Image 1 (tube, rainbow, N blue to C red):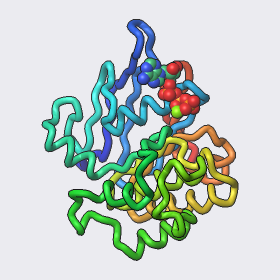
Image 2 (image 1 turned 120 degrees about the horizontal axis):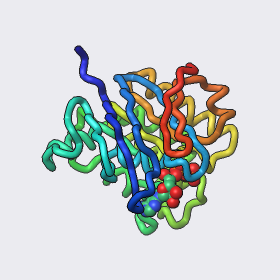
Image 3 (image 1 turned 45 degrees about the horizontal axis):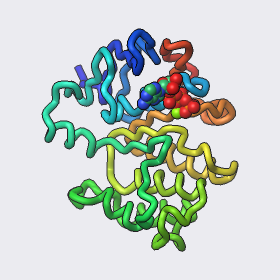
Image 4 (image 1 turned 90 degrees about the horizontal axis):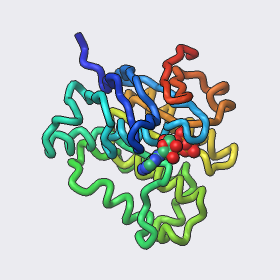
Length: 225
Ligand SMILES: Nc1ncnc2c1ncn2[C@@H]1O[C@H](COP(=O)(O)OP(=O)(O)OP(=O)(O)O)[C@@H](O)[C@H]1O
Ligand SMILES: [Mg+2]
């Protein structure tokens, strides 16, 4: 039997004793899958994605990434798994005093050349995000939408098995949103699995994919693709 890219088993999260943000979260993601994570503000999308990206620990349950349990994996194994995942967090995680170029360099630090996105492909993404003339600018000198595009661009510097994106186009205008979604779809078609949180139902209607819904602490995967 093929090992799932991501296997989530009965995951639960609580920040305050006795108060669960979500529980009984179970699903599998295969290579090249695309799954929307839907839910209203505060439903738990970001906390779930941070947990799946291994930046937060669950209160219960486990996440297996290519068969490796994130809870019990050693440091070097966890590092290896993280190198195969790109994460675009909702808060972007950019450093204000560093330039766009600095961020791109940092994200490729220690990554073998075979695992880096090819220069030509990266140049195309830079052009598409409209950041070509701003590469030397500090993050603090960019607009909110531009900063979000830097976080997206950074996710395209490496070849990964899984891209986890938390409302990645929330600060973009209509035209840019669809340019970026086209980029995500192409990446997905090339074999990278995608977990994409949004509350943009218009997007879900236009680009139909499997949906998972977080509501009142429960998680349900629907088949609406
Ligand atoms: N670090 C934290 N400490 C305590 N509570 C937290 C923490 N992070 C999230 N929460 C709580 O968990 C719940 C879910 O938050 P989360 O950010 O996951 O929601 P979300 O679905 O991403 O919302 P939004 O659409 O507004 O981004 C919220 O009630 C929030 O207050
Ligand atoms: Mg969120």
